[in-house]
Image 1 (cartoon, rainbow, N blue to C red):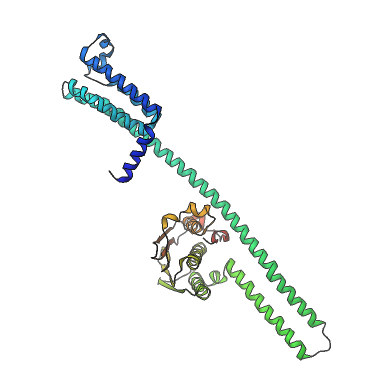
Image 2: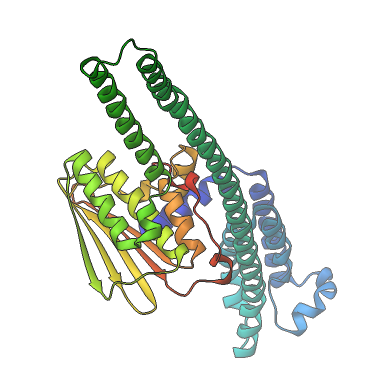
Amino acid sequence: MPSSAAARLKEHVRQTLPSKHWWVTMALVVIITIFYWQFCDSRFSLTQYFFFELRNDLVGVLYLIPFVYATLTLRLSGAIASWLLICAVAAPRLARYSLGLDSSVHNAANLSVPFLIALVVLLEMRWRERHRQLMIERENERRMQIERVFAAQESERQRISQGLHDDVLQRLLSIAYMAESLGTAGPWDPASIQPQSFAIRDESIRLSDELRRLSYDLRPSILDNLGLLPAVNWLCVRMRNESGINTRVVTRGETRRLPDAVETAAFRIAQEALHNVARHSQATETVVSLLFNPDHIVLEVSDNGVGFSPGHATTTRAVLDGHLGLSGMKERVASLQGNLTIRSRPNEGTRVRARLPVKLPPHAEAAGDNPGLRTAA
């Protein structure tokens, strides 16, 4: 017996034996066993009440009472334990008073059929209970994820609003003040005006760079204008410049434009995977590969970093911790009826692989981008 099964059986026994229902079951079995010994050996006057058993060469119909009681009160563990106990105490009597093949078959069926029926019913009940619990967990997970998404969206909007107010607005006011001082200056003197005009120009360029960065963070125009491959190339160049990680793109198949929902999902998955590499992996090299097939594309992001144990990166844990990167990728792939696999081992790097169909399901035709789902894991 596997160790896990043995541990479960041991746990069942540990929980069952202290129960008062188990002691009631044992008492019933003992009483019925003593009765049957007297019934079979002495054939006393109560024999007439068991004409059914005598007529069919049965010994043990009364054992159904403790068996049913244990099954109803202790469920699966009670059914198994009581059945084994009944078989143990009834076996000597069955061996002595079964008068032939038919009698042996009747007695074996008398003990086995109720057990098999109870086993099937209890297993079905347990499966339904587990299914119900799973549905409840999924619903709770979905509710928590929606709440976290809304919170992430509000946090993103607050960050953008704060950046516009504290940075962009202040720079615009600075440019306005410099332009005002330039307009109220004294007699026209190119030597004195030139430094101020250059300052206005430099501040305007820095402001435009900041607005362009903010716009690209929300949704890069290169994705809409040029497509997925140039956008992924831009992501890799940006990551290489900001983190110093050697990042390159590998393509296979005939590159082409894809439906907007597919390009958006693939871009956001690549963006989130690269963000996780830069933040968590301690990698020195990352490879982003794109495989273009006629009916689907495959996006893969692999690194040579420290890796992690995938069993600890469950969606529920990520949602509870407020990290929506993993759940966001899974949701994007699921919305397109694709497939996402994450393979990693400690000190052996990580590989994120998303397979997305090119032909979209009906509900995804008009799917838009959801900035809240790109919050970092």
